[in-house]
Length: 534
Ligand code: HEM
Image (cartoon, rainbow, N blue to C red):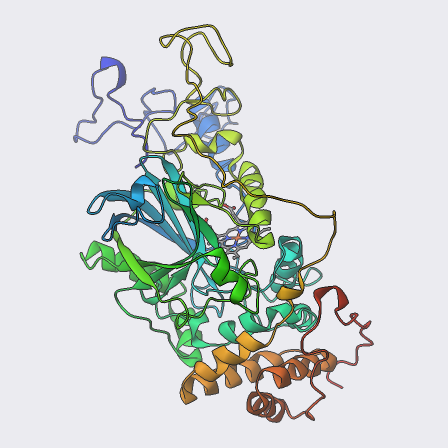
């Protein structure tokens, strides 16, 4: 995958040492005679400035680090392919959905969300499940998680969510776990997160390995067929290996014994030829169906129940190749929700729309240049031509005379042209309404799906959720935050609220009100008069 910047360029004779190794050179290709000692005036003398090999080596080392991802910093990637097994031309005109049996190259990066780059793999956390599909019509990224819902409904809340989940700013800890006051403070003041809270307190957030997780696109997207007809869709990745988690004790011990457990597991499985595989499932529905739900399909804190819309399995994703170079590929890969192809389209989900801005923006900072699409792992594998040019590390400047359009030049010199027939077009949509900062009333039920999730769990799984809540909330030092959380639990399931209140040794508080609040009418966050451990 990495560009082989090797020694044989330009017909120069291949340089080898007497023992047959490739000769070490500077970045300029000059053979190095001694890599152990810098150039000095005399055996004990001061260093000489002219030692270009030393200076180049240390200069390069000094600049090895790039910013880690602001979220999902810790991750592990692998290559593979997607193969369509069911023709989907009824719902999408995308090439990838129209050619059964064709293999589309893919790169997948799994990650934790809150932990820094060096954090342990088995933290209780959501797992990222980001898939880049190098289709013949451009790169399509499904940047999903292993949980089908999210904490917040509007992307404007994302920095707050993440600030609350990462290290507390004064003390720089705790690093990754959800067990701290700030996170539970934010969650308990954000009833919209209650469905997600049930999922993250379940065993889903301590998966046995990346190979045993589901993946979800989370948002409602649109597929668009050749007639231009849109169909709403939710994307699901179902692991052929099955769904497996560890229990909390195992997670804690594994973190101590081998903090790289998940990345090692994926590496070892692929190297052993035991290629992990997922089926792509689609939940498809139309506008009329969407209107029948009590909740809004644009609300990313809700699932579409599989009993109502069964999943249509349409393809398989297989991971069969580890990376050649972790930094070049896994670290530098840049997924983005706005990377879609003709036949796929966005919805007005306010979380999705915000993500479409955030990824590109952060990647320019993280990777240092708008030319990060020139990095091999990010470049499309289909032909691409545009007039974007220059900037740091530009590798693919426009060829020929024209770098603008319209221009008068012919097909030889004139460069690329728009393609009204085949180019990407958004689904036409009538839009009207006052400019407002509100959310629809249909985003306001924060408890029903949390309850449905909880009661759908087996007794053992329910007990794990209760125990996880007791464990996490017992780490919270501020009593009002614990009480506020239990008051939400009363709107989810009374027995769960009782179990957690008992475990924490606190009185059962009144249920949070209102149980179904218009989003504009959230209870004000009372200033905390903090009595630690009071
Ligand atoms: C990174 C998923 C919401 C901003 C990621 C990654 C995943 C992901 C899987 C890691 C990609 C990789 O492996 O490189 C999700 C899901 C979301 C969500 C499923 C909700 C449904 C958001 C929101 C924002 C956001 C609302 C901001 C408004 C970011 C940023 C990164 C990131 C800045 C780092 C990207 C990079 O440095 O390359 N997200 N995310 N995410 N996400 Fe999200």
